[in-house]
Length: 517
Image (cartoon, rainbow, N blue to C red; front, side, top):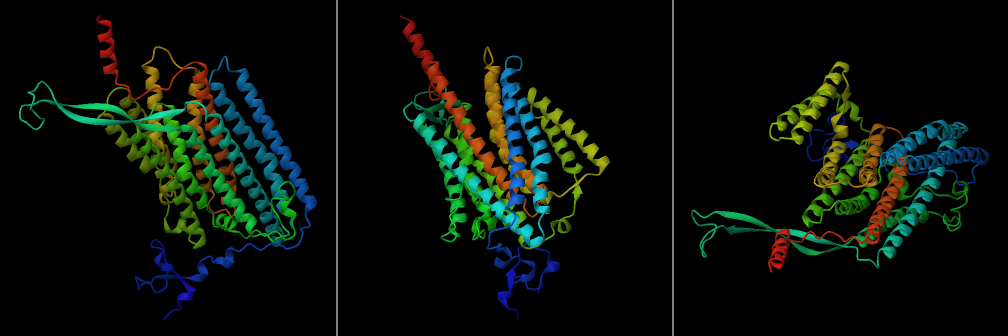
C-alpha cells in the first residue's frame, strides 16, 4: 500500500528508473519530493519596507541612462535612414533596424546589465537578494502590462474610429468548380463515353471582410490579456496597498506588497499560457491582414493561413510546457535524451531537396539545388567539428517554423510574381514594408530560441515575458499604422480596392460587343 496523498502520477515520458512501483503500469508514481508543490512556488518576501532604496535609485539611474542611450541610438538611426533614403531607397530602413538592434544590445551589455548585477550583488544575503529580485520584477511587469494594455486600447480605438467612415471592406471571394462537356450534344454529360469535359472555375463574392474591425479585435485581445495580468497582480494586495495609485511611484518599496499571484507563479514555473492563448487568435488575425494586403481574398486561403499561424503559437505553447514540466518535475532532459550529431538531419534534408529538384524546373529547381549544396557544405563542416544538439528539446520549435513559413512563402510569391508581371516595379518603400512584416513576426522566434537556449536559468521566463510584451505592442501597432497609411494613400490617389470576383473573360466579351457597333 502507498499513500496516494504523497504521490503524483507519472508522465508517460518520465524515466522509469526514478519511478516507484514501476511494475504497476496503471499506478506508476514519482515521489512528491521530486515535484514542486504550491508551497515550493509560494513567493514570500519581506512584509516591511526594504532598506535598499539608495542602491535601487543608483541602479534606476543607470537603467534610465541606458534606456535614454538606446532611445537616442534609435532616433539617430531613424534620422540616418531618412537621410540615406535617396541613395538607398528601402534598404536604409533595414540598415537602421540592424544598427539600432546592435547598438541597443551593446548598451544593455555595457550599462543596464552590469547595473542590475551590481544591484543584486550588493545584497547582504540570499534572502535580501531574493527580496530585491521579486519586488523589482513585480514592479516592472505590472507597469509594462499596464502600459501595453493602455497602448493597445488607444491604437485599437484609433484604428476603429479613423477607418470607420471609409469604405475599407475587402470583398471575400470563393472559387466554384463545375464539370462542363465541350462540343457535345445538348443532353451529353461528363459521365458519357467519348465526351470531352473541362473543369471550369468561377470566382464569386461570398461577403466582405471589415478590416478595421479585425484590427480592433486584434488589439482588444491584447488589452484583455494584459488586463488579466494586471488584475492578477492587483487582486492579492491588501486594501492599503494599491498598485494603480502607486503606478507612477515605486511599487517595489510598498511595505505590504504581495507578489504571490497566479501570474507570477506561472512565470516562476517558466511559462505563461495566457500569452499563447491570446497569440493563438491575435497572431492569426494579423496573418489574415497581411494576406489581404498582398492581394489574397479567397476565404479558404485566408483560413488556412490563419490556421498555420495558430499552429505556430500552439508549438510555442508546447515548447514552454516542456521546459516547465522539466523544471517542476526536476527532470534532467540532458541525461534522458543524449545529444546527437547535428550534421545528419542537414545531410538528409540536402538529399531530399536535391531529389525534389528533378521534379520541378526553372528557377524553383535552381533554388532547391543551391540550398541543397549549401546544406551539404554546412553538414560537412558540422561533421568535422562534431557539433551536437538535442532534437527533443527543439522539436516543437522546428515544427513551429514549418507552420510559420507556409503562409509567408505565399505572401512573397504573390508579391514578387506581381512584380515580374508588371511593366514597372513598385516603390522601394513598399518592399521595405513587406519585408518589415516578416521581420516583426520572426523576432518572436528569436525570443523563443533564446528562451530554449537559456531554459535552465531561474528567471528566463521573466526576461522572455518582457521581450514578448514589447514586441507584441510594436508588431501590432506597426501593422495598424502600415495598414492605415496604405488605405489613406489609396484614397488620396483615387485608387479602388481590387475585386477578385470580376470575370475578366466576361468583361472582355462585353467590351467587344459594345465596340462592334
